[in-house]
Image (cartoon, rainbow, N blue to C red; front, side):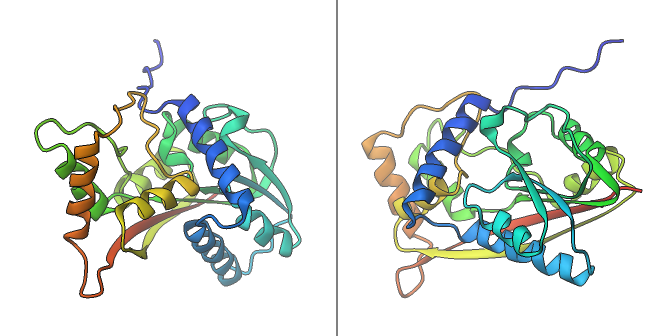
Length: 251
């Protein structure tokens, strides 16, 4: 029997281009990095709570280098896989104490396969920590993009995984036990364009296989105006990133 065909939701060439752009911005030293800073701090706190000091770590994602620096402060030997390596759906060599996937797995076509490869690359007793921007995030941005094209809106944001689906995926991948939780990360903006710029700097923009056409000048203005409809008395719009963290162990 043939294996079921994996739908091609995401473009890996667009993932690579997104990564190159984010790396270039991060190297300038003034790009937004708040999402990855939060992820690195959260994983550090979780490892401290569990009294885990990993010897070998695999990181997937994070163009900022903040998570690598955090693990190296803990004395770990760090291996990184980025979209430029082209290993989104390939088996991973190694036996790692910790695998940290940061805002990466949610734009892989074969998520169950990627999780299985991660589990197979873990040492016995190892921990996988899979974090990504989950369903329910960026409500103001979604509203603004719909308002930009009220008659025939194009798909400009990819589908997001919710916490229940994430937990089910971890079970399907065969982790010995798993925990799924989430926390909100908030950022406020005076301009629609600044939010989009921060997403670009952190490799968080659309990489759907079917690339939508650019917004027209009029549509972009409608998006800007709709975004600011959610502003507070100080003219700032608070956007929420719902961070889902899936933790799984290997016997």
